[in-house]
Image (cartoon, rainbow, N blue to C red; front, side, top):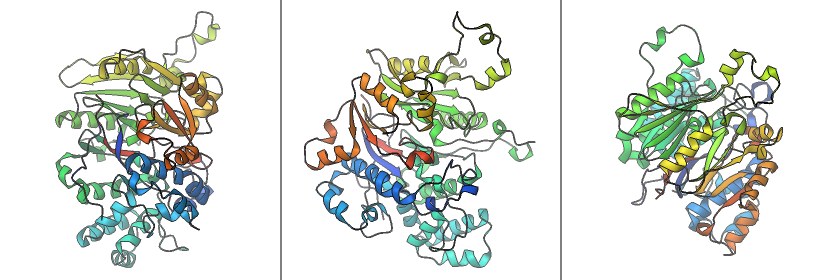
Length: 484
């Protein structure tokens, strides 16, 4: 069982402070069971090849995180791990060769840990069986299943290698969406899609029952439904109370951003504002309404932070769309309804002020954050998806050019397939290196992970990018150093 050591402290007060502890979930067998007819129902655009994803892509991600967060688990062992006949056992939580870190923390491990408690196992099994419409005998069978095996079943939906008893939850690899750490609080999500309801349930049980979070029980917040929500007519998205972690960014100790998107409703953002202000979690919350389209999904698919004065973003929705003076006449009188639907709106609320502040564009907001939240004296820099070149801007945003994870300020992970965006990083003076080469340099003591600066680490992306999420999505930071 993973237990909190004396150094563990739940604390995330920025997107770029040195990463010290993170929650992830390695690709499981459920991902390999997604069928074409159900892919979109399960929020996938395509089916993926599980073994390639594990061995040739996610494997590098885990090793890289360990070098930065828990180096004694990996340093000097790279050749030994890679020489094994089945080296993916290294990141399979139920295998004896599992890396078992308390810094790079596996969700399945935490789930298996809490299932050791008989009362938790009984309650959680009953809850899962209720939402999955299992019969009573199956519920009893699952209750009597060993915790490690039961954790696998709850995630993969598979009772054994051949029998599936309910749908998998393949989106669990996007651990960002189950919740978000804000300072020393955790805000749990309310998923917008039925396909993610079991993830939400498992997350609740983990955060409320695992010893790792025992000291923070009073700081775990759940978004409530609006009063008498069950009487509301219709199924309009804005009426539902939904919020997902990809739409929440902890910018600074006092400032949070929440996106209203395809997955997070206005009602969800409204309830989050009230909850966070009532609990004195932050003093300022900015709401960014982006077009409600599958292209964007969450705000972290259109921008993420690289340094205190640098951001990567999709320009087409980052700036106010005002026709240029020499535009054709049609640009000035295009259909107003379409413009209203697709426009970006930004409103900032402060706890002690009644009147909110409005921003004209995402760029204006991010510049304000760099100058005022981070006290940056250098000009704010923007790196644009596809190097701001059509059609590469939209193509590369689709494959997560803007969805980057900072392991420390100025050192970010991104997919190697987004050529034009990579070119834009190079133009800003960033060092580019493939993860395979970087791991070799770490192992040979040619480079110290903590000494890296202004570096874009290029991660293989053939299968992972087809799952429609980048490394920001695939991480839920639990601890970051405070930015000074």
